[in-house]
Length: 256
Image 1 (cartoon, rainbow, N blue to C red):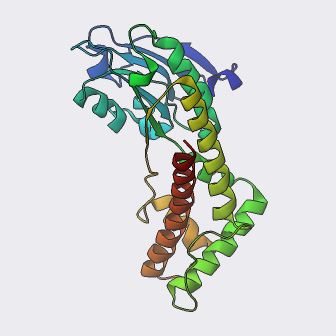
Image 2: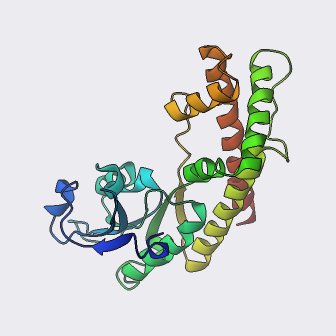
């Protein structure tokens, strides 16, 4: 988060040139963070009032897929707010992980006056988890577990044994997905305690077409896996990760 790097980032509220559609809207405001060494900018808080007025508000938290400033275009949550229509409060930040969502939610709530936008009528959109996967690769023990996962899923893709229905307890997919699931449940409990009743959790855009993912599987299989084999392995990997998060959400819904 921005406050963790005070020497490398600074706040800016000047009109962002990458968001011309937002700058021209009456009452819209963008507070973002710029890096001192690299030409990058990340959202801190985007406010876009609904032209039609009313008490409907869309609160967005998460990572780059919901960060208009980082992506340089209007992401799907912003388009959803425009289509509803609803006042948009977006605190999603590119590069953030699931644990950062709690602070993002608190920041968004501080911006919305409860008298005008009752919490029970707000729609909370959560799009996070992708960076949990990416940053876990920086830990050597987890990278070793990922290599073992890829070999096991590659064997299943080749028909040597049956693919697992759920990730193993001691595996890269199992450890990372369970940690993301725990943080997600923690976030949902916090949102519930704040009064939220409408929550939309987006599934991760995990696809075998992602170049980095394909390169990683090819590397971990020593370049011996054919293209179709890499695709099948990635599909199995992402299916297991998504199934673990779905199970966590289903468990929370049953408790609520």
